Length: 248
Length: 222
Ligand code: HEM
Ligand code: SF4
Ligand code: FES
Image 1: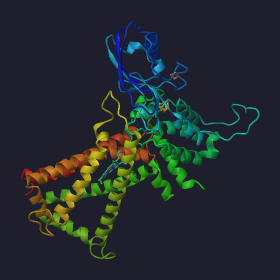
Image 2: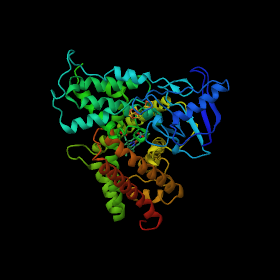
Image 3: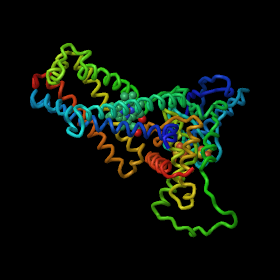
Image 4: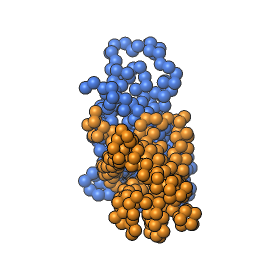
């Protein structure tokens, strides 16, 4: 396949960036999107140019490091991570636009790499449980009703990639925060911090400068892990319950 | 708790949802009341008079009406301020646009802000037209039937009203469902029911409100 790539290039957070156009040839349909970018980078390095910076780690769809907006879609046209997107989703001769996640809470570090430590701070503010240290308890020591376990698993699938923020016209982190809150709040292990968790994580989310939710649903459409939109309603319910209950 | 509500995006959204639902409840009553115009001036003007005597003898003349008015103004103000503040925040959270554009979300969802602005302007015009009569050409207090006929006998009266009602319909379609999510009522199994309810509510309100100018234009009501 022969492709025209229009890629966001930006030296660092201080200098303004712009789209740059590149041609790549000899791309196989079986390559992943990131392997296609590796091919481009090899050519750039051989030509003495600076390679395009982009985030990646596991390349198997589980770590949440990869992050590209491809033709306006976070993680591209398929509902998966960019590393699991393959070139067979494109046609020979296509022009592909590649941009970084856009949100003021995700500042661009370089080219396609953005700083997602705002997500880490949301997790730090409440995405944990208090457990006694020592030997691990037996897995079946605390019974969990099946529907609760399923709800927790569904929300625990979130890999913290940030596609939801990138897709949201308000740069809102509600889907991510909801996934993290619900995951722990439905489980008995999460019960001691149930109220403070949701209040603190939502407060931190606001503090980081993410936008509010207008229920456009773009986040759930983009999410590679299928975190459903009703997760947000579930977190709102937790938040309203906590504002009534919490003793501070 | 009030501070928690006002300082949080989730809390402010809750205020919008509750104030929106209060306005929505009012709109349903208002729409049903308007349909009395199909039963002649006696019935319509009598209904308008009852609005002033409602609550008597516990309440004095017009007290109940004023309580409703104060409540509605509070709802509009809280809803509007929250919408403004949240919108500013949302725009700041996404300063850079994508170079590769594509339409996002449904039409009703994308037009909430402009729709809201149309609604505020309409509410002001509507009060000046049919409550105070300030912008009305031949206003007569106590004769709402005739005042309505006069308004809908002008082309601009019809245009302003119909545009506003369509904007209201779209706003309610996304707003009702949205409020259910904000208040935590939505979940995967209830979603279809809530969406259908939002569509039905929006359609019934739109048709009910629009039937009045259409009836005047076609001479069914004169
Ligand atoms: C004063 C004029 C108004 C303005 C400026 C306004 C603006 C807005 C905005 C910007 C939103 C948020 C949109 C979003 O989340 O995507 C909204 C939501 C809403 N509006 Fe309005 N609106 C107005 C009047 C009304 C009226 C007359 C009603 C009554 C039917 C209404 C009912 C609602 C409801 C129920 C919501 C959903 C709240 C939520 O998402 O939880 N609004 N409005
Ligand atoms: S909710 Fe989905 S899109 Fe958002 S961070 Fe988690 S996995 Fe990524
Ligand atoms: S590189 Fe780990 S999810 Fe894509």
